[in-house]
Length: 342
Image (cartoon, one colour):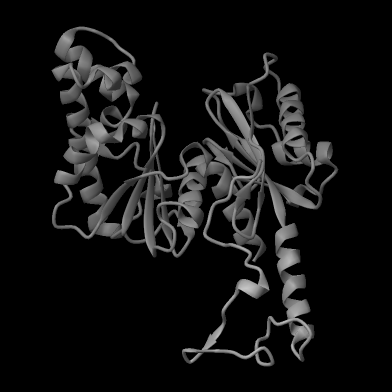
């Protein structure tokens, strides 16, 4: 099964109308008509299209407890079969590298000419070197050269294995084939256990410049006597509800109960207000056209978007849930790969 993202379609030549100044070209003039002087040009165009179709990359999304992998084709960011599995039971770098390799082999079955791999990873991580700097999660990968390890297992050169931040991958997916497609300036926010962020200008992620916080990260920005992540995270929602009721409940359960539980509804409204205030401050410096929301909490966007949007009145800014959802980082990893290749 192939999932297609983007609006590209192959149209048979006989069904294609090419117009010149409002008048349809004759058969002798139409460069796509078989058997005329333009056959050589048509063959060259078809050869280029075939070459583009053959461009593909193995992509990974390394999440909190699972890893997803697929093959993405560069012409329109089509994903092949998505393979997802939980982390291996053995917590060692060798076991994890073997797990990634096996997952990639399974995801790329049936694809020829896969040009390499791009992996979306959480931080802290040395993305240029391919070395994990995480100590609090996946500690057995700390200091490990994952690029070299994967390259050896696949029989590739180290340069054919690349890494990017998972927040950047999310936004690039939406820029390349989702809610931010075709827009000049965009921000991606992932809402879950923590808050991730990325900023893009003309389809490229930026980590510095006017209105961009250091490294493009907003989780640790000062907010109401703490940091932003205190309010815009799972613990922010749970803590607010616990203060109101004395009960500690899962966010998904609160979302399900919000229609009948006024405290749950109020908690999500508070969450939206905090989000809107934060985004208004960001918009004043970066001036995005759209902010795309992803992550587990974004699945309950209907409960907090109205409160967030009320804080953004007067701004030329759209606040949209992700259209690619869980597939955005996979598509974004491919976007990063093909942008680098171009």
